[in-house]
Image (cartoon, rainbow, N blue to C red; front, side, top):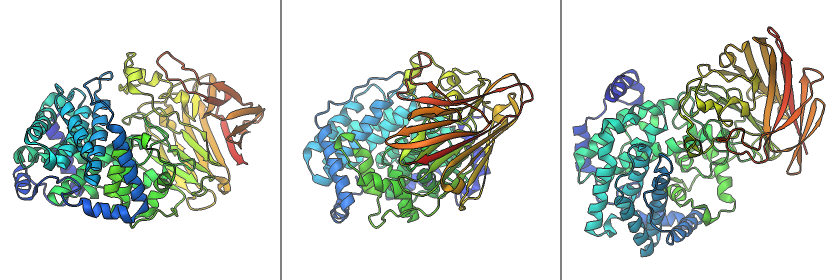
Length: 611
């Protein structure tokens, strides 16, 4: 296998569009750092800029509410004991994230109020993690997030820290954060094409910039590597902005890319054109359209349905001067916010990245599609709470963090999510039981996990078979912007060996109902073709019609063909295997079509909401 440096170099040779002109050398960046790395604080919010931030907060009510929540979160953290080095399974990641959350929140609280309690509590947290034996480089995300947290605290609090504390923190950033990243056994992430690359480079660049005045050559080495490495991962945003690993990992990877971009700009005055990478800013559209009318996102791959406030969307909206991207974020901010939600870190970043002049407006585009490694399409009847929304995906199970969910969909109507994706299961709950979770081969244990396999998806299953890891489904759309938008998926390679061809067509007739047409051409073996949908609604079956009710709303699910088909309800709330997570309240609405070799069944299902 080529070295990491060779892989990065080859990629850049093939991708001249990512940077305008030649990448600067380590020596050139070191010179820039010596000339331009001003006094602390230098990351994001320079010394003295608190006053202008306070003025924006004073004159912008929503920012005032955010500020109050940050302070409330900081108050809650005052009584928390300092963190200790306790691993959960093979990760220290929970501790690293807690450090980042606490330090950013407390440091922002200090900079906004001058209350020394926040300063002292942040100092205690920083010294506690700096005293750890290491930051667990065996799982380098742990190091990256810890480095980010300590770097921000060190920089933001520098002028109020005593010299011995400064020395301890800068030494920890260098010895426990930066130096291990140059050991071959810990640095495979630098050639990764996924969120690891973004998070690790982002956290380390923050660390490098925080100690740039002390170690300009070392900092330049970190930055030079990041500028060459990050495009390997962010190339996945192209062409349209859909993040292959799903909305959850969009949040993770994009946040660290934005942190890196803003840190470089705040210290060096340039992001070296990282913002201009194809699809990167367009990913704001992806997250907007991936959110359903129920307020939940399409939680495909290792995602969760409720992601919460996303600081990166405020940053993208500001960069693009596009307030429509904030449509759902604005609704979240307008809702009831409890300080116990412990979102101080995210809210602090929003205070930094929000453009107070942008007011969310209703988007005008109803239908959106993105190509790329994991194509997706989103169709809706409108942008109101009761409107119809369907998200459907193509792609391949071979994508990082992917599930066997090719062709699966989620559906919202009347403010209710009727067809669910179960989302991710906690990694440690599986790894602690010996599951080889991140082995993506066809015979891997990963595909035996209920939530990850196709047996839990809103899709057809042929003879209990798994989807083919090597397959991929593209999406062809038509009628977008008309009264009957259509997304057409050729899933044939995903069902390799099970049928000659499999096609799924998803449409919104009159934008009043959802129609799913499945065509299976020439089944290979005797057995059953099963149509299935996950729901937590109450189900009442009457032959080929199932009446679903939830929250006082109703949805009729009718099988138009094969004629005479009868629905059945299957309880899937209990774990299927001892390692599976429970799925409280979940059922499968199932239709089974017996088949023989060569049969070509057609299944058409209508989902019709009514009050």
